[in-house]
View 1: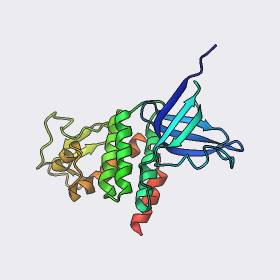
View 2: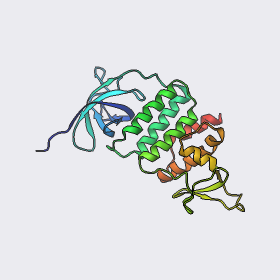
View 3: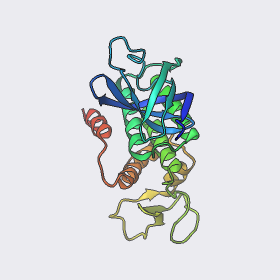
View 4: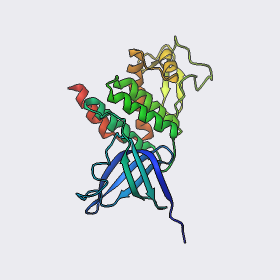
Length: 240
């Protein structure tokens, strides 16, 4: 007889939930010690359920679950507190972070460092810090954690270090290659931008401007070209 796995009192965040049967939910929870875990919250939609109103996105939760199958059973969830609510553009950014995690993070693959970065990013968004540097930094951290870390600080053809005064083509599958001076018609990245990104430094407007396009290319590549709904909404709001 297979022993039923029981995990108790884990810190986690709700990434997404959807209806399941008449009174329950399927909740995708991002936990620090167990990664992204899908679980059924039985009866969570009933008026008297202890879980009703607790399963909120962007709030730290104390969660427990059981089961050995692909979808676990949520047995306990309570709000830990200490996190300000997201609003406005910060709320949309939070949905964007969650969609990235749902699309790129394998299930039950623990990433404690990424969890801490996610929690810190939410906290910074909640107090109104500039969202663009936070998003670029999180995108880069996520790609590094799931094994898609882009090469940024050396030329992948010559093996030489990227020079801040040179310009580079960025090959999506491999990394930067110093651009011939005669190919100015192609989109190029300044070396100083690549080096700043390698140091997780998005303080410069020039770095932010170039990093936005590069990270979009890399993420779309690793998503197989699939569009992100949250990004589409955010871009439409920026245009308005």
